Length: 278
Image 1 (cartoon, rainbow, N blue to C red):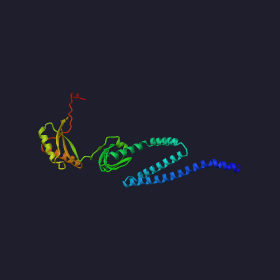
Image 2: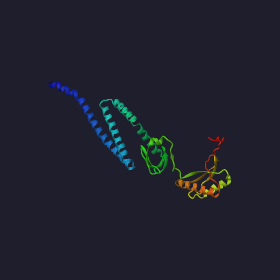
Image 3: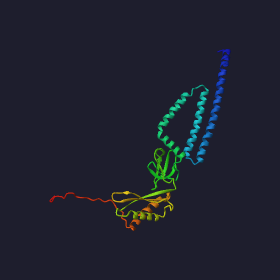
Image 4: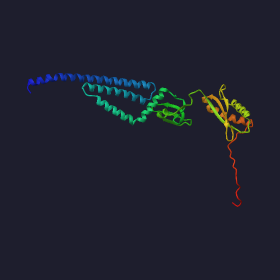
């Protein structure tokens, strides 16, 4: 190759080299800025979540997730500057996302349920609930699980999808509750006397609400007793105390009124006598 041919080659390659050199410099600048921004935003998200007493591991996870998402977007954008089609990369990322979503289907459902619980607040920490077949006090509401302590001090961890997909009861949501106490009286007892005795029993329950709409209700006629129900209103935290005091007062009131509390019994009749010698 002589000098003239070399000069022509350099002259022809100069625009191409210049163009790609500018693009390379631009890509390096974009990537440098992207890394800086990604790191700052990721650290900011992590710090804000931790400041709100969010779980430390999850705070760092979400910060890292945002950081890598920004970097990935910057890399794909830089590939487009060199004329490389990013559609295929998007398809691969979408397929990978679908595969990951299917693999973590249960985990993602727990995550979605946890977000719904945290947003709509059907219960709060400290509430006593019956959820997913478990009754206890809410100790922690996480993105994936909810932790409860049962009345006998067992710690139960329930997946959020189990809670969100079933009917739940927030026992302590209201300040007052009604205690329903059932009792049976003998058929021989007078209806009015039984009612008066049970109304007297209500007055013996100290933990009841004094201005509550208490009621003595005739439920029905059972196989061996006249069935009654005494309904007493109380503060929610006094429920079990009123339950015990009410049952005690009802039994004593019926005993003082000489009204029997029957129990199930069975009468056996022999229709034919057994032959002698058998």
